[in-house]
Image (cartoon, rainbow, N blue to C red; front, side, top):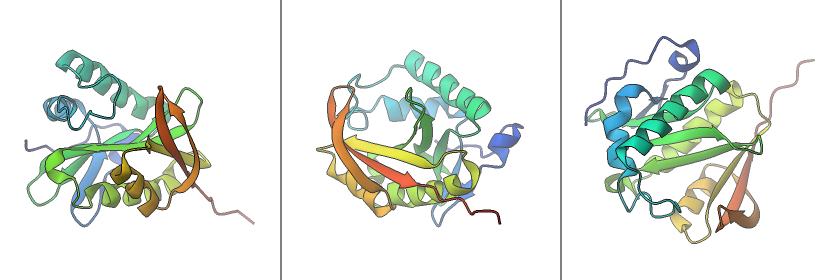
Length: 184
């Protein structure tokens, strides 16, 4: 699905378009609904989520929440668009947890797994976070048996913190410390 890269007029979003070697990362927008339906209805993509695949109404609700997060927090989830063909290939970015911590995560279509896109996007977004997010660290976690996702967290500089449970799933928890320059 080709995606229009025009972001909305919200300055928090319009100042948050990133480019990597192969990707354009921009805040999710209403026009991403169909692409998100494809992503979130894929059983392979959603295999590590206890609720499984999402239907179109659940995707619509989630997308509204993602867009609201940008307005509320000044950060949120990004669409990952492959530059070569202007295709939506996944989503990645940040979400505020109920604990107040900020989680980093990503989902990509299976066709793009194992090609370095998750690592490429993750590195760019964590670098962006050091300049644009009002937090001192980012949390990342993956199911303990999801070794590919754990490797991505490690490759982008996150440090292992502990093993624990999230939504009754055994997970490996990681942390990325944001060091802000001190003003003298």
